Image 1 (cartoon, rainbow, N blue to C red):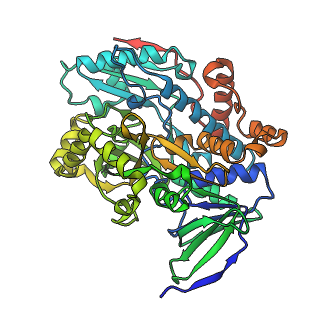
Image 2: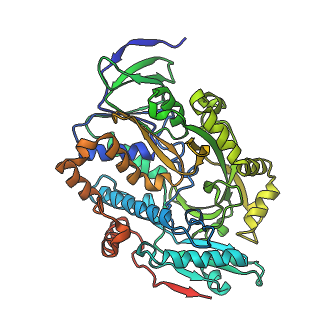
Image 3: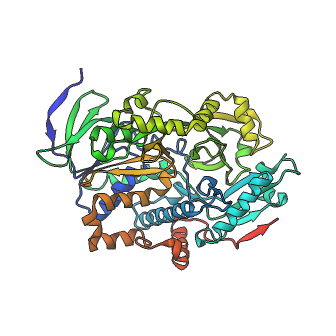
Length: 510
């Protein structure tokens, strides 16, 4: 039987649950802003970034809205919606500024190990989709964040951009693509582990691997929170006192948020969606593709399932993935429990979850179809992007779990949110991050929003304001409205991070 220590340890100023990119980002930001802060990190696995932030699990390897078509839906009147794409592009620029600051100041010393230049492309076929992509191109050209995007319907031109995609394709098929040469590939697993390695060298920072957070509740006598942690090796549990708690446990955040019992947590539910990749094992094929090529999602598919033929650098080696193929499991984490979903259902979220399910029947049908796919079905989907693909060159790789946010809605009863959401207590003493895409790529802007909610006095102080502008030069300004500032900061971050600097002249080829 597990042994419990009755005494409560005097804990840190800040306790981070989960050793992923979000906790790493928040931890570094807070320690840079307030060096005297003490920080503890608790992670149930034996290393950092082993769940959603791992390179094999994470679908978001540099989301900047250059090529992800789900961020630019077509409205009923035929126009293209661009605000979300602009916001994500701006947020990714903030992330690059923060990483460049860490590299320039010696906090990170291996930029090529976690970020590299790779063209971002959107590819479609069929007359209707070609018309959509051209309208999308025209709409995005209205904002300088997308300056340098090229558009082409010329098969010869596209064959030069992405030979695997065009070889063996019906020459009569209408096709179109866009290309952004300043796209990147980010290994968030490598970045997260690098940040934590440096963070735990700093005074007042302690990492605890192999510890599961079992419960948490307000400390009425001391203020802040008591957090019950279990040593998974010995089974012993103890209670830790913390002033501020961040729940950054990926899919596991929902259950811990519910345990906090803060009023703001009521009504939230979660819907898990698994993922799988086809991984190319033929090195000759891998070496012939140098791009992230995104297409359009199937009807009813969640946004995270937008198919893409994706070049990634993982552990210093170029890899080629296709997918993701969606799956269903009641687990909220890849290394979670099948009881995660049923345990998350409470009286406060039962109605929103039921209503969200009724409103998303196409998604349910889509997931059933995906789960029932045969290897031949997966190969057929790949052949739409790589016509000459051979089954022997690919193997199935299990990716991470995502938990989509379900929340109360006055009109619908309950809605499924495809994004990320910070839920925090009114007094700012605890916050949790729910949701998935675009997640990791916008971690810096998400954590800035969290600090505004949870550390309002400190973040408004002249000292924090000055430090934030040093770390993130565009902080407090709109890059979307300042072309010259965007140009200057892109040049600066590209130089420091070793990325492609030259934006191409906008070009249309038909």
